[in-house]
Length: 211
Image (cartoon, rainbow, N blue to C red; front, side, top):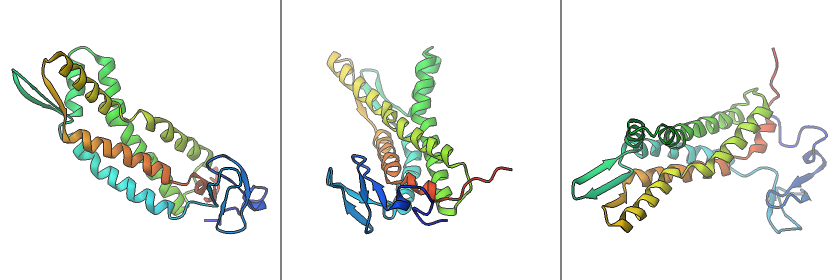
């Protein structure tokens, strides 16, 4: 792996670094400088970026299983109490004819978190072991997981909305189950892991060699 800023013709090679907060170019004379425009901390690379990313990512992977196995919603009514997981909700909407809603919940709550964690793991492994992958594609993948992160709390929003509507009509009582807490933790951890990952490290890896 080459040292940061080793590529000729780059801003870092000229001793300049863009502030992550406002984009102001700052002359980097030490490991860290203070941005003259916004006062933010400007660093060549985030310290311990990979270590924090791996720690947060592994925690998210561990919590992903209880998030899908434990009830995300508990419904109490005159007819009894039911406990619904994310997957049982997908199955219910599928059999009730709401195929679009079932596909949406499955994609946002089950499929996309796995894709996000897998992509982030590949990017971290690429940086750590210097895999000669296409760096532009890696950056596109990183931007993708940044973009989809904002849609990851759909299930939690649905539970909160249904709880408010049902209680308003006094039909039943809906409460978030332990699965919702685990799912919210998975979303938060994956977003923190994405934020902790320094995408500039991708450009420190060797270029992909085409066959």
